[in-house]
Image 1 (spheres, rainbow, N blue to C red):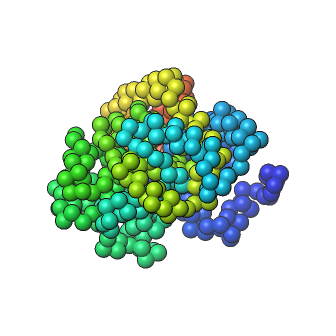
Image 2: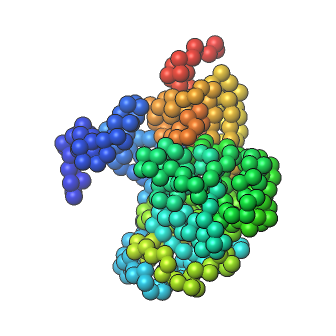
Image 3: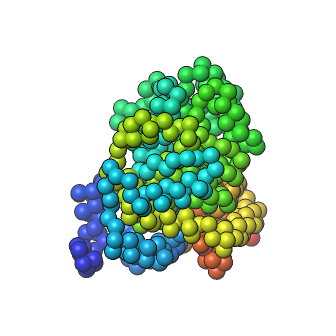
Amino acid sequence: MFNYGYFSFDSKADLLQKATEYWNPGKTKFWQDAGIDLVIDGREGYFLYDMSGRRLIDLHLNGGTYNFGHRNPELVATLKSALDYFDMGNHWFPSVARAAFAEKLVRTAPGMQYAIFGAGGAEAVEIALKTARYTTKRRKIVSIIKGYHGHSGLSVATGDERFSKIFLADRPEEFIQVPFNDIDALDRALRGRDVAGFIIETIPATYGFPMPAEGYLQACRDLCTRYGTLYIADEVQTGLMRTGQMWGWQTYGVQPDLFVTGKGLGGGIYPISACLVSESCGGWLHEDGAAHISTSGGSELGCVVGHQVIDMLQRPEVIANVQSVAQFFQRETARMMAQHSDIFVGVRQRGVILGLEFDHPEGAVAVSRALYEHGVWAIFSSLDKRVLQFKPGVLLDAALCQEIVDRMEAAMPRARELLRKPARAA
Ligand SMILES: Cc1ncc(COP(=O)(O)O)c(C=O)c1O
Protein backbone atom coordinates (compact mmCIF):
# COMPACT_ATOMS: atom_id res chain seq x y z
CA MET A 1 0.00 0.00 0.00
CA PHE A 2 1.36 3.42 -0.97
CA ASN A 3 -0.37 6.03 1.13
CA TYR A 4 0.43 9.63 0.28
CA GLY A 5 -2.11 11.13 2.65
CA TYR A 6 -4.07 12.84 -0.10
CA PHE A 7 -4.40 9.66 -2.17
CA SER A 8 -3.17 6.10 -2.15
CA PHE A 9 -2.35 3.21 -4.47
CA ASP A 10 -2.30 -0.51 -3.81
CA SER A 11 0.95 -1.01 -5.68
CA LYS A 12 3.15 0.39 -8.41
CA ALA A 13 1.19 -1.73 -10.91
CA ASP A 14 -2.03 -0.12 -9.66
CA LEU A 15 -0.54 3.35 -10.23
CA LEU A 16 0.65 2.43 -13.74
CA GLN A 17 -2.78 1.10 -14.62
CA LYS A 18 -4.44 4.34 -13.45
CA ALA A 19 -1.87 6.49 -15.26
CA THR A 20 -2.75 4.59 -18.43
CA GLU A 21 -6.46 4.81 -17.84
CA TYR A 22 -6.77 8.44 -16.71
CA TRP A 23 -3.56 10.32 -17.46
CA ASN A 24 -1.51 9.56 -20.58
CA PRO A 25 -1.52 6.06 -22.11
CA GLY A 26 1.10 6.93 -24.73
CA LYS A 27 3.70 8.27 -22.32
CA THR A 28 3.11 5.51 -19.79
CA LYS A 29 3.56 2.81 -22.45
CA PHE A 30 6.58 4.49 -24.02
CA TRP A 31 8.67 4.16 -20.86
CA GLN A 32 7.49 0.62 -20.15
CA ASP A 33 8.53 -0.40 -23.66
CA ALA A 34 11.89 1.35 -23.22
CA GLY A 35 12.66 -0.70 -20.11
CA ILE A 36 12.50 2.37 -17.86
CA ASP A 37 9.87 1.55 -15.26
CA LEU A 38 10.41 4.75 -13.29
CA VAL A 39 7.65 6.27 -11.19
CA ILE A 40 9.26 9.10 -9.25
CA ASP A 41 8.32 8.85 -5.62
CA GLY A 42 10.64 10.35 -2.98
CA ARG A 43 13.04 13.06 -4.10
CA GLU A 44 15.78 14.87 -2.31
CA GLY A 45 18.85 16.75 -3.49
CA TYR A 46 20.17 15.07 -6.63
CA PHE A 47 18.43 11.80 -5.77
CA LEU A 48 15.19 10.40 -7.08
CA TYR A 49 13.52 7.32 -5.61
CA ASP A 50 11.37 5.02 -7.67
CA MET A 51 8.17 3.66 -6.08
CA SER A 52 10.13 0.44 -5.55
CA GLY A 53 12.47 2.41 -3.29
CA ARG A 54 15.37 2.23 -5.74
CA ARG A 55 17.62 5.33 -5.65
CA LEU A 56 18.70 7.11 -8.82
CA ILE A 57 21.11 10.00 -9.24
CA ASP A 58 19.35 12.64 -11.33
CA LEU A 59 21.41 13.82 -14.31
CA HIS A 60 18.35 14.73 -16.33
CA LEU A 61 17.18 17.48 -13.98
CA ASN A 62 14.19 17.81 -16.26
CA GLY A 63 16.18 20.10 -18.52
CA GLY A 64 17.70 22.11 -15.67
CA THR A 65 14.53 22.49 -13.61
CA TYR A 66 16.39 20.80 -10.75
CA ASN A 67 19.61 22.75 -11.20
CA PHE A 68 19.70 23.10 -7.41
CA GLY A 69 18.47 19.55 -6.85
CA HIS A 70 15.08 18.40 -5.69
CA ARG A 71 13.33 20.23 -2.87
CA ASN A 72 16.37 22.35 -2.19
CA PRO A 73 15.97 23.18 1.52
CA GLU A 74 16.69 26.89 1.10
CA LEU A 75 14.15 27.20 -1.70
CA VAL A 76 11.56 25.13 0.16
CA ALA A 77 12.00 27.42 3.20
CA THR A 78 11.64 30.45 0.92
CA LEU A 79 8.39 29.16 -0.55
CA LYS A 80 7.01 28.18 2.85
CA SER A 81 7.71 31.59 4.34
CA ALA A 82 6.37 33.34 1.23
CA LEU A 83 3.09 31.47 1.77
CA ASP A 84 2.67 33.29 5.08
CA TYR A 85 2.23 36.55 3.19
CA PHE A 86 1.81 36.09 -0.56
CA ASP A 87 -0.36 34.08 -2.90
CA MET A 88 -0.38 34.06 -6.70
CA GLY A 89 -1.27 37.74 -6.76
CA ASN A 90 -3.34 39.53 -9.36
CA HIS A 91 -1.62 40.01 -12.68
CA TRP A 92 -3.51 43.24 -13.34
CA PHE A 93 -1.68 45.26 -10.70
CA PRO A 94 1.89 46.25 -9.96
CA SER A 95 3.18 44.09 -7.13
CA VAL A 96 6.14 44.16 -4.79
CA ALA A 97 7.23 40.62 -5.66
CA ARG A 98 6.95 41.12 -9.42
CA ALA A 99 8.70 44.48 -9.43
CA ALA A 100 11.51 43.21 -7.19
CA PHE A 101 12.05 40.06 -9.26
CA ALA A 102 11.88 41.94 -12.56
CA GLU A 103 14.56 44.34 -11.32
CA LYS A 104 16.69 41.45 -10.06
CA LEU A 105 16.52 39.68 -13.42
CA VAL A 106 17.11 42.79 -15.52
CA ARG A 107 20.22 43.57 -13.47
CA THR A 108 21.70 40.18 -14.39
CA ALA A 109 21.26 40.88 -18.11
CA PRO A 110 23.07 43.86 -19.63
CA GLY A 111 21.08 45.45 -22.45
CA MET A 112 17.69 44.31 -21.12
CA GLN A 113 15.10 46.66 -19.64
CA TYR A 114 11.91 44.73 -18.86
CA ALA A 115 11.04 41.25 -17.61
CA ILE A 116 7.68 39.91 -18.80
CA PHE A 117 6.58 36.84 -16.87
CA GLY A 118 4.97 33.59 -17.89
CA ALA A 119 4.30 30.29 -16.16
CA GLY A 120 6.35 28.03 -18.47
CA GLY A 121 9.04 28.16 -21.12
CA ALA A 122 6.71 27.97 -24.11
CA GLU A 123 4.73 30.92 -22.83
CA ALA A 124 7.91 32.97 -22.49
CA VAL A 125 8.80 32.01 -26.09
CA GLU A 126 5.30 33.01 -27.15
CA ILE A 127 5.86 36.43 -25.56
CA ALA A 128 9.23 36.76 -27.31
CA LEU A 129 7.80 35.94 -30.75
CA LYS A 130 4.85 38.28 -30.28
CA THR A 131 7.23 41.02 -29.12
CA ALA A 132 9.39 40.52 -32.21
CA ARG A 133 6.34 40.83 -34.45
CA TYR A 134 5.09 43.92 -32.65
CA THR A 135 8.48 45.60 -32.76
CA THR A 136 9.32 44.91 -36.40
CA LYS A 137 5.77 44.83 -37.82
CA ARG A 138 6.92 41.69 -39.68
CA ARG A 139 5.40 38.21 -39.37
CA LYS A 140 8.06 35.67 -40.31
CA ILE A 141 10.02 33.76 -37.70
CA VAL A 142 13.21 31.83 -38.44
CA SER A 143 14.36 28.99 -36.21
CA ILE A 144 16.85 26.12 -36.30
CA ILE A 145 16.10 22.67 -37.70
CA LYS A 146 15.79 20.41 -34.64
CA GLY A 147 15.59 23.42 -32.34
CA TYR A 148 13.08 23.16 -29.52
CA HIS A 149 11.12 25.99 -27.97
CA GLY A 150 8.06 24.35 -26.44
CA HIS A 151 4.59 23.27 -27.45
CA SER A 152 2.33 26.31 -27.44
CA GLY A 153 0.92 27.68 -30.71
CA LEU A 154 3.76 29.89 -31.92
CA SER A 155 6.56 28.06 -30.13
CA VAL A 156 5.63 24.64 -31.50
CA ALA A 157 5.56 26.03 -35.03
CA THR A 158 9.29 26.83 -34.67
CA GLY A 159 10.16 23.24 -33.72
CA ASP A 160 10.37 19.73 -35.09
CA GLU A 161 7.52 18.38 -37.27
CA ARG A 162 7.06 15.50 -34.85
CA PHE A 163 5.44 17.90 -32.39
CA SER A 164 3.58 20.24 -34.74
CA LYS A 165 2.14 17.99 -37.48
CA ILE A 166 -0.01 15.98 -35.10
CA PHE A 167 -1.91 19.15 -34.19
CA LEU A 168 -1.84 20.52 -37.75
CA ALA A 169 0.48 23.30 -36.61
CA ASP A 170 3.35 22.39 -38.91
CA ARG A 171 5.02 25.37 -40.24
CA PRO A 172 2.64 27.80 -41.80
CA GLU A 173 4.67 29.75 -44.34
CA GLU A 174 5.56 32.34 -41.73
CA PHE A 175 7.82 29.84 -39.96
CA ILE A 176 11.09 29.00 -41.69
CA GLN A 177 13.86 26.71 -40.47
CA VAL A 178 17.55 26.71 -41.25
CA PRO A 179 20.29 24.23 -40.34
CA PHE A 180 22.31 24.91 -37.18
CA ASN A 181 25.83 26.25 -37.76
CA ASP A 182 24.99 27.22 -41.37
CA ILE A 183 25.41 30.96 -41.60
CA ASP A 184 24.80 31.11 -45.37
CA ALA A 185 21.39 29.49 -44.92
CA LEU A 186 20.51 32.10 -42.33
CA ASP A 187 21.66 34.86 -44.66
CA ARG A 188 19.35 33.53 -47.38
CA ALA A 189 16.44 33.32 -44.93
CA LEU A 190 16.88 36.86 -43.63
CA ARG A 191 17.98 38.79 -46.67
CA GLY A 192 14.40 39.52 -47.83
CA ARG A 193 14.21 41.81 -44.78
CA ASP A 194 10.81 40.41 -43.89
CA VAL A 195 11.72 38.31 -40.84
CA ALA A 196 10.63 39.55 -37.41
CA GLY A 197 12.73 37.29 -35.23
CA PHE A 198 15.42 34.65 -35.35
CA ILE A 199 15.09 32.32 -32.37
CA ILE A 200 17.90 30.01 -31.33
CA GLU A 201 18.80 28.00 -28.26
CA THR A 202 22.30 29.13 -27.37
CA ILE A 203 23.17 25.40 -27.38
CA PRO A 204 20.28 23.33 -28.82
CA ALA A 205 19.33 20.94 -26.01
CA THR A 206 16.83 18.54 -27.55
CA TYR A 207 19.15 18.23 -30.58
CA GLY A 208 21.83 16.85 -28.23
CA PHE A 209 23.80 20.00 -27.35
CA PRO A 210 25.76 20.42 -30.61
CA MET A 211 28.17 23.26 -29.89
CA PRO A 212 27.92 26.48 -31.88
CA ALA A 213 30.90 26.72 -34.26
CA GLU A 214 33.46 29.38 -33.42
CA GLY A 215 31.95 32.78 -34.29
CA TYR A 216 28.61 31.32 -35.44
CA LEU A 217 26.36 33.00 -32.87
CA GLN A 218 28.04 36.38 -33.40
CA ALA A 219 27.64 35.97 -37.18
CA CYS A 220 23.92 35.26 -36.60
CA ARG A 221 23.72 38.39 -34.46
CA ASP A 222 25.41 40.44 -37.18
CA LEU A 223 23.02 39.15 -39.86
CA CYS A 224 20.04 39.99 -37.66
CA THR A 225 21.36 43.51 -37.21
CA ARG A 226 22.00 43.88 -40.95
CA TYR A 227 18.51 42.74 -41.96
CA GLY A 228 16.47 44.29 -39.14
CA THR A 229 15.57 40.93 -37.57
CA LEU A 230 15.50 40.59 -33.79
CA TYR A 231 17.83 38.03 -32.22
CA ILE A 232 15.97 35.94 -29.64
CA ALA A 233 18.08 33.72 -27.39
CA ASP A 234 16.27 30.75 -25.87
CA GLU A 235 18.02 30.29 -22.53
CA VAL A 236 15.53 27.86 -21.03
CA GLN A 237 18.25 25.17 -20.81
CA THR A 238 21.42 27.23 -21.16
CA GLY A 239 20.64 30.00 -18.67
CA LEU A 240 20.99 30.10 -14.88
CA MET A 241 24.76 29.52 -14.70
CA ARG A 242 24.74 26.23 -16.57
CA THR A 243 27.34 27.43 -19.06
CA GLY A 244 29.44 28.96 -16.27
CA GLN A 245 27.85 32.41 -16.54
CA MET A 246 24.34 33.49 -15.67
CA TRP A 247 23.22 33.47 -19.31
CA GLY A 248 24.67 31.36 -22.12
CA TRP A 249 24.72 34.34 -24.47
CA GLN A 250 27.14 36.04 -22.09
CA THR A 251 29.46 33.02 -22.34
CA TYR A 252 29.53 33.46 -26.11
CA GLY A 253 29.74 37.27 -25.99
CA VAL A 254 26.55 37.73 -28.05
CA GLN A 255 24.01 40.42 -27.28
CA PRO A 256 20.41 39.33 -27.95
CA ASP A 257 17.55 41.78 -28.41
CA LEU A 258 15.42 39.62 -26.16
CA PHE A 259 15.74 36.27 -24.46
CA VAL A 260 13.70 33.71 -22.56
CA THR A 261 14.29 31.73 -19.39
CA GLY A 262 12.21 29.15 -17.50
CA LYS A 263 12.61 25.68 -15.94
CA GLY A 264 15.16 26.20 -13.12
CA LEU A 265 13.99 29.79 -12.64
CA GLY A 266 11.33 28.44 -10.28
CA GLY A 267 13.82 26.23 -8.44
CA GLY A 268 11.81 23.13 -9.30
CA ILE A 269 9.16 24.12 -6.75
CA TYR A 270 7.08 26.93 -8.26
CA PRO A 271 6.67 27.35 -12.02
CA ILE A 272 7.71 30.68 -13.45
CA SER A 273 9.32 31.85 -16.70
CA ALA A 274 10.33 35.18 -18.15
CA CYS A 275 11.03 36.95 -21.40
CA LEU A 276 13.53 39.77 -20.99
CA VAL A 277 13.50 42.52 -23.59
CA SER A 278 15.58 45.56 -24.39
CA GLU A 279 14.07 49.05 -24.19
CA SER A 280 13.68 49.14 -27.96
CA CYS A 281 11.62 45.91 -27.83
CA GLY A 282 9.44 47.17 -24.99
CA GLY A 283 7.10 49.25 -27.15
CA TRP A 284 3.96 47.20 -26.56
CA LEU A 285 4.36 47.50 -22.80
CA HIS A 286 3.81 51.24 -23.28
CA GLU A 287 1.11 51.04 -25.95
CA ASP A 288 -1.00 48.36 -24.26
CA GLY A 289 0.51 46.71 -21.20
CA ALA A 290 -2.37 44.20 -21.16
CA ALA A 291 -1.65 42.99 -24.70
CA HIS A 292 -0.26 39.79 -23.17
CA ILE A 293 -2.14 38.49 -20.14
CA SER A 294 -1.36 35.44 -18.03
CA THR A 295 -3.16 34.80 -14.76
CA SER A 296 -0.45 32.49 -13.46
CA GLY A 297 2.46 34.10 -15.29
CA GLY A 298 4.56 35.99 -12.76
CA SER A 299 2.71 34.56 -9.80
CA GLU A 300 4.02 36.37 -6.74
CA LEU A 301 5.02 33.11 -5.05
CA GLY A 302 7.04 32.21 -8.15
CA CYS A 303 8.64 35.67 -8.08
CA VAL A 304 9.78 35.23 -4.49
CA VAL A 305 11.28 31.82 -5.30
CA GLY A 306 12.86 33.08 -8.53
CA HIS A 307 14.39 36.02 -6.70
CA GLN A 308 16.04 33.57 -4.30
CA VAL A 309 17.19 31.35 -7.20
CA ILE A 310 19.05 34.26 -8.77
CA ASP A 311 20.50 35.24 -5.40
CA MET A 312 21.83 31.72 -4.87
CA LEU A 313 23.27 31.49 -8.38
CA GLN A 314 25.25 34.69 -7.81
CA ARG A 315 27.09 33.28 -4.80
CA PRO A 316 30.84 32.90 -5.46
CA GLU A 317 30.85 29.37 -4.01
CA VAL A 318 28.13 28.27 -6.45
CA ILE A 319 29.98 29.77 -9.43
CA ALA A 320 33.20 28.08 -8.26
CA ASN A 321 31.38 24.75 -7.88
CA VAL A 322 30.07 24.94 -11.44
CA GLN A 323 33.66 25.32 -12.59
CA SER A 324 34.96 22.39 -10.58
CA VAL A 325 32.08 20.08 -11.60
CA ALA A 326 32.65 21.09 -15.24
CA GLN A 327 36.38 20.39 -14.99
CA PHE A 328 35.82 17.06 -13.29
CA PHE A 329 33.48 15.80 -16.00
CA GLN A 330 35.66 17.21 -18.77
CA ARG A 331 38.56 15.13 -17.46
CA GLU A 332 36.56 12.01 -16.63
CA THR A 333 34.50 11.86 -19.82
CA ALA A 334 37.71 12.22 -21.87
CA ARG A 335 39.23 9.35 -19.95
CA MET A 336 36.14 7.19 -20.34
CA MET A 337 35.91 7.97 -24.03
CA ALA A 338 39.48 6.77 -24.52
CA GLN A 339 38.67 3.60 -22.63
CA HIS A 340 35.37 2.86 -24.37
CA SER A 341 36.14 4.22 -27.82
CA ASP A 342 34.25 1.38 -29.53
CA ILE A 343 30.96 2.93 -28.43
CA PHE A 344 31.67 6.30 -26.76
CA VAL A 345 32.81 8.62 -29.54
CA GLY A 346 32.35 12.23 -28.54
CA VAL A 347 31.78 14.78 -25.81
CA ARG A 348 30.13 18.13 -26.30
CA GLN A 349 30.55 20.42 -23.33
CA ARG A 350 30.12 23.94 -22.10
CA GLY A 351 30.11 24.30 -18.32
CA VAL A 352 27.77 21.72 -16.79
CA ILE A 353 25.97 21.17 -20.10
CA LEU A 354 27.24 17.96 -21.69
CA GLY A 355 26.15 15.78 -24.57
CA LEU A 356 27.81 12.34 -24.76
CA GLU A 357 27.88 10.85 -28.27
CA PHE A 358 27.61 7.14 -28.93
CA ASP A 359 28.42 5.30 -32.11
CA HIS A 360 24.94 4.01 -32.96
CA PRO A 361 21.75 5.75 -34.18
CA GLU A 362 20.04 4.76 -30.91
CA GLY A 363 23.22 4.65 -28.84
CA ALA A 364 22.07 7.04 -26.11
CA VAL A 365 18.80 5.12 -25.66
CA ALA A 366 20.82 2.03 -24.77
CA VAL A 367 23.22 3.94 -22.52
CA SER A 368 20.34 5.71 -20.79
CA ARG A 369 18.79 2.33 -20.00
CA ALA A 370 22.10 0.82 -18.88
CA LEU A 371 22.70 3.80 -16.59
CA TYR A 372 19.17 3.50 -15.26
CA GLU A 373 19.86 -0.09 -14.33
CA HIS A 374 23.00 1.14 -12.55
CA GLY A 375 21.32 3.87 -10.49
CA VAL A 376 21.72 6.96 -12.69
CA TRP A 377 18.97 8.72 -14.58
CA ALA A 378 20.15 10.61 -17.72
CA ILE A 379 17.96 10.98 -20.78
CA PHE A 380 18.77 10.61 -24.48
CA SER A 381 18.20 13.58 -26.79
CA SER A 382 14.77 13.25 -28.41
CA LEU A 383 15.94 14.67 -31.73
CA ASP A 384 19.32 12.92 -31.93
CA LYS A 385 19.25 9.58 -30.15
CA ARG A 386 23.01 9.10 -30.53
CA VAL A 387 23.51 11.73 -27.85
CA LEU A 388 22.96 11.36 -24.12
CA GLN A 389 22.05 14.56 -22.31
CA PHE A 390 24.33 14.66 -19.30
CA LYS A 391 23.35 17.47 -16.97
CA PRO A 392 25.06 17.68 -13.59
CA GLY A 393 23.50 20.13 -11.13
CA VAL A 394 25.29 23.26 -9.96
CA LEU A 395 25.55 22.05 -6.35
CA LEU A 396 26.92 18.53 -7.00
CA ASP A 397 29.69 17.63 -4.59
CA ALA A 398 32.92 15.79 -5.37
CA ALA A 399 31.81 12.47 -3.84
CA LEU A 400 28.64 12.33 -5.93
CA CYS A 401 30.54 13.30 -9.08
CA GLN A 402 32.86 10.35 -8.46
CA GLU A 403 29.94 8.02 -7.78
CA ILE A 404 28.38 9.01 -11.12
CA VAL A 405 31.60 8.12 -12.95
CA ASP A 406 31.92 4.81 -11.11
CA ARG A 407 28.34 3.92 -12.00
CA MET A 408 28.94 4.89 -15.62
CA GLU A 409 31.95 2.60 -15.74
CA ALA A 410 29.88 -0.22 -14.29
CA ALA A 411 27.10 0.39 -16.83
CA MET A 412 29.30 0.22 -19.95
CA PRO A 413 29.25 -3.59 -20.42
CA ARG A 414 25.44 -3.54 -20.22
CA ALA A 415 25.32 -0.66 -22.76
CA ARG A 416 27.48 -2.76 -25.10
CA GLU A 417 25.18 -5.72 -24.59
CA LEU A 418 22.11 -3.62 -25.43
CA LEU A 419 23.87 -2.32 -28.53
CA ARG A 420 24.83 -5.91 -29.36
CA LYS A 421 28.48 -4.95 -29.54
CA PRO A 422 31.01 -7.63 -28.64
CA ALA A 423 32.52 -7.26 -25.18
CA ARG A 424 35.76 -5.32 -25.27
CA ALA A 425 38.93 -7.29 -24.83
CA ALA A 426 40.43 -6.41 -21.48
C1 LIG B 1 15.12 25.22 -24.91
C2 LIG B 1 13.70 25.12 -24.47
N1 LIG B 1 12.85 26.12 -24.74
C3 LIG B 1 11.56 26.09 -24.35
C4 LIG B 1 11.06 24.99 -23.68
C5 LIG B 1 9.62 24.95 -23.27
O1 LIG B 1 9.48 25.04 -21.88
P1 LIG B 1 8.15 24.48 -21.18
O2 LIG B 1 8.13 23.01 -21.32
O3 LIG B 1 8.29 24.97 -19.77
O4 LIG B 1 7.00 25.14 -21.88
C6 LIG B 1 11.91 23.92 -23.39
C7 LIG B 1 11.39 22.73 -22.68
O5 LIG B 1 12.00 21.69 -22.61
C8 LIG B 1 13.26 23.97 -23.81
O6 LIG B 1 14.10 22.96 -23.56
